Image (cartoon, rainbow over all chains, first blue to last red):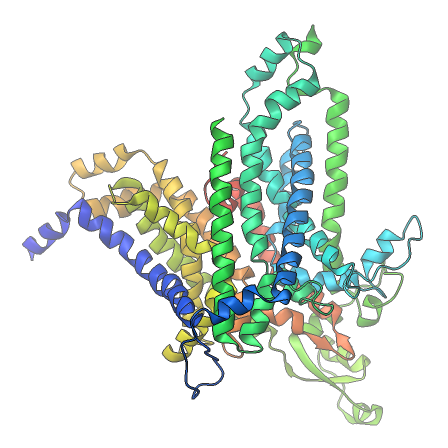
Length: 300
Length: 315
């Protein structure tokens, strides 16, 4: 008995390291990597998950060729790109602006930051369904507020195929601008005061200080925030699924929404797996290039 | 001369006031949708669909009653033949010419969210802190690659792995079960939990556990009795982040659960009244669902930045 305890005590650091890491690694391999490999394997077949008895045939690259040659898929990619680009641009501008304002330490600063941050902690699906109420052209608050001072007319934000792509941009911006803001604020607070003091001695104008000190220091933080948001919005599903569910028609059918329709409504498992792999490779590729560029900017 | 020594953090009185004003205006605008949702939960069904929207209204608990009950409309003479209502909510439903036919599914869905949320949080924090400790203290081969691999699992669109998981779960009998969802959310949270906790543990001086080990503790004992207590704040913050994620998750929940283990987010949008969505009831469900997250956010505010960036920005 005593020797057993002794042995336990003497467990080498190496053994402990592996005992501690193993469960995490095994779970990730089983629930993340195995399904991914499974998906890659299925992407080369004509498998339909709802037709169990049917023979599964290996079809090679057929699914990939079909997807990449399809006009419709490029449309979805364009819709996704529209959503990602506009949300990033708007959130970068407003987020940075808010951070600059919050950095002028005034009373109640902490409380205001916490209140502003609230939207991003909420459940995107629940936010989505609630915004359909706000956007409702008959009874919604949105149109009431827009028309409060001047009669612009009624905007059917979700029902019109020209406005719907903007309706999801607005809600995403409402929800996630605080994210960019918080990260930029951290960047601003990391700038040492002596840089500005030195600039004052050199008689640099406020604008010059902003361009030469503030902006370069915040940029890496802003880029990091945009990386996170870019990845999240490229795979955006929950918010849009409840807000417009891809409609009207397919005006807001982002890549993930389209993927869900193909995989869980039409049950084209093989085909949708190929699409999933393409999406994953795209995110991974873009992400890696972005990180390289980001690191270069940081090192400069 | 006073003027030149000013840095942006000690801006002039006027610019500070202007900044505060703009921030307050933004705060008010950004909180309108949330306040409107809470207000709607206290409206009657008729008041919720009137135009112009009623900013001032007679408060009603109809939304909350509708959220928790199933009701059916009945003819007047049948209602008259019933014994008088026993409770205030029965009375409220009767006044709308309806009777309560039973409890709704909201409570089971809400408790599913709690069970799955707490279960997944416990396991992801427990396993995450073990892995984080090992990665923080020991020489692990390919450490950086391992950490990046753990992080990269977050880049999969959930829908991409949902199909294989759906098939796997069907084979294993884990589809639409609490256990299945707890395992799934644990795994999704692990990347966040490992990254955050590694950051927190890196900040605990090694000398603490080394001193304990000189006093005769084994490495294991030192971990459980010295390091973990030191990391309490970090563990609590990580746990809250995992809880918020599991609480808010929608994609896996809507695809993999239906009857037994469905959580609240896929359920709330389906609350239907007569002739369309029952907005006060949805408002009520949303309010009850969002309150815990709002409290968490206030509790977390010091660690918020760290949590949302996976520890990349520590302030």
